[in-house]
Length: 296
Image (cartoon, rainbow, N blue to C red; front, side, top):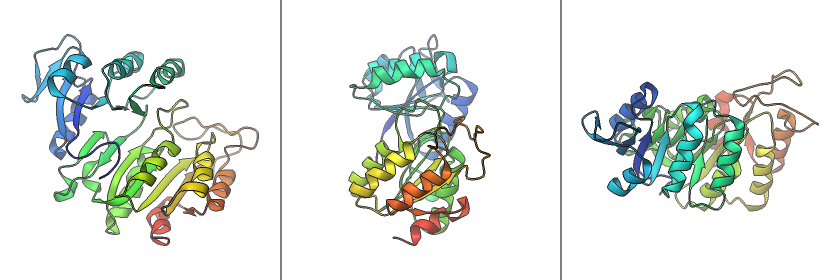
């Protein structure tokens, strides 16, 4: 079943003709994902890799291809407008890979998305993968930049702020013969489209997800809020890890530029909240799968 995307989800890529967007579109096609359209203004009528039609706008691409999800590889100054164009076109899912979108732009995007039919993942995130059942999980839906081959189809959900730690958790699970239902990198920007809690709720409701790994990092209160909800509502075993335990007090840490203030957002506070919620917390990144296996 999975969440957000299935292997047959039709995806369009905004910024498909850029070097970064083009490279990862190639990898998604190689992975077997259904990339049905690209969008680059002024490039309509061209084809990417001789197979994927390119359109000037998202609305036209959706009308012609019935795409329901978008990957955004548009440069930071134009990325917010690209997200809003996807929202206006009625896409169910928008995954913003772009790093460095101005916070002010994202505040406007967040306001526009509230009440819309669109779910935003990111920005500044590795994306979403629902593994396929072929060799090296081929045939799945890969939106973003995560390496496809590390995945394995199964029933463990993964949600993380950090891309690198997402890959680490996934590879540990795969090496322990535990496949994944869906892996979601939510990104580390100050104004995220979706939080840990948003994704945890989806995993909790997904009949094909048996257990969850939640990876957070210092700064903010998202992990504490998720832990509070998990304690009262989650029906599935959850393991977790908090990055940044070695950060000097008051220092910025991680891609989110996380700042600890007023005693909130510390690794200690997050770990305490997670343990209080019954989450199995790994002490080091190398123990994330092990922490889940203990409670399955």
